[in-house]
Structures are given as structure tokens and as C-alpha cells.
Image (cartoon, rainbow, N blue to C red; front, side, top):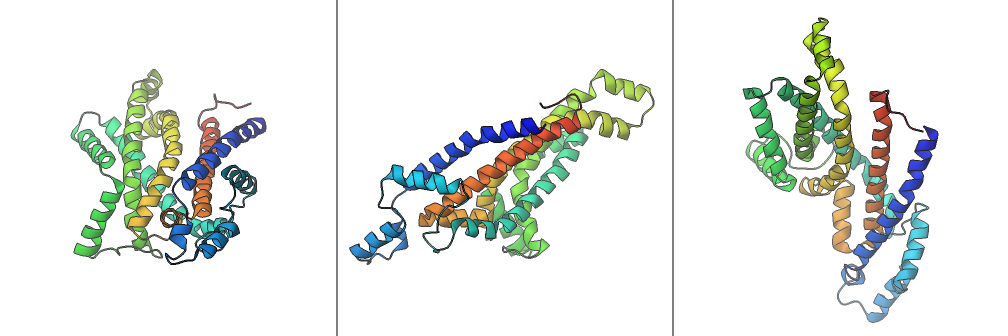
Length: 305
């Protein structure tokens, strides 16, 4: 197991380097941040001084070499907009983003897996049809549209929940539900499909023939064996979750990394954008490694060397 973890971590180095390269290229082709950060009437000497201060006057290959070397040490430079460490800005907002992402994933797992199990157990009944219809709607509605509609209905018209901000469970509920809807639909569909395959296996019939209760058969025998593909989907959805956070935080004025990323993109604040992209990539890599390790816990036949 330790050897497997070490090999996986080594394999992530080329991936992270590629992410650094792509994020560097995409941010620099977006334009010169001097045009947005300095006032329109700034003198040419002030513009030149700004570029020299932040290294924007050097050749791109020199900038990338310096950026890569420092980024691998956790230093993404100073924010062009705020003049403070870019990584410190991101880590300050990370608590809010983690809170929202965890709440959304808890909702997605807590609703999606039971719904998928129920739909599979009551296959081709009214319950199954309703669940499948809801999953189609959940996957079809864009998160930004759902967020705006939720604000209009639950905050403006009914006055039940606040329109945005962070600090209370009421402020967390709408953005978490909005962010989780697409993932709920996907987990439900995958769980239902996997459960249908497992419920027709011989060992399920054997368990029932031994007199085990239906709850034990479904929970211990069927769901446990059907959960590995579901776990894979959950791990992959972390990347989707990080992308959805950007839109959801903007709609609900949630003070997290996603909203910071949007503001940095508009201001062409290269160091902050690159720090956000690298951090999200690291989270995705680590979560998928943890998912691989959980396979062995769920299925003893799986081993890593």
C-alpha cells in the first residue's frame, strides 16, 4: 500500500506541471492586466513601472520558469489587485468553499443513494418513474438558472430564506441545494443501475433463501457490492463540484474561492487565478487517490502493491 501511494503521487507530478502550463498560457493570452488594474489616465512610466514590479516585462518563457519554480514551493506570487500573497487570499476563502462543498456533497449522497436504492427495489413502479423523472429534471436544469429561480421563489416571494451571504444555516441551505442538485441526479441514476445489476445475482437469492430480512439483504449484500461504481462517480464529481462552486458562489454572493476566482478573472489577476486552479487540481487528485484506497476497504479482493 505505501508503495502504491508513493507511485500515485509521483504520477501526479506531470499532471500538476501540465496544469501549471495550461493555466499560465490561458491567463496570459487573456490580455495585459495593466490595462484593468491601473486607471485609464495612468502615465506610460507608471505602466512600465507596474510591469517591471510584477515581472510582466520579461519574456514569457522566463516568466513561466520563475512561476513554475515558485509554484511548486507553494508560492504563486502577489496578487496584482490587492498586493498580498495570492495563496493567502485563496486559503482565507477556502473555509467558506469547503463548507459549501461539503454541505452539497452530504446532501447529494444523503438523497441520491437512498433514492437510487428505492427506485431499484421498486423497479417499474410509480416510485421508480417519479425518481427517474426527477433525475432527468435535475440533470437538465443549469445550476445558475436554478440558483436565480431559488432566490426569486424562496427569498423574494416567500421570504423564507436570505438571498445570499454566509454565516447561518439558512444562508447555506439554498446554495448547497443548488450546487448538489445535478450530483444528486447523477448519483441516483448510477445507484439505481448498479443496484438493478446486483439484485438479480445468485447470492442475493441465496441470502433471501436463508431467511435474511429484506433490509439486511439490500443494505449488507446488495448495496455494499453495488457501491464501488457509485464511489467512483462520487470521486469524479469533486471536479464538477469545484466548477459548480464558482457559479453558485457568484449567484449567492458566497465569500468563497469560486467568487474570488471570478473577480480575479475579470481583473486579470494572474497569480490568484493560477493559485485557484492549482489548488482545485490538487483537491481533485487527492480525493481520487482516497477513493482508490477506499475500494480495498469495500472489497477485500482488491489489493494494491
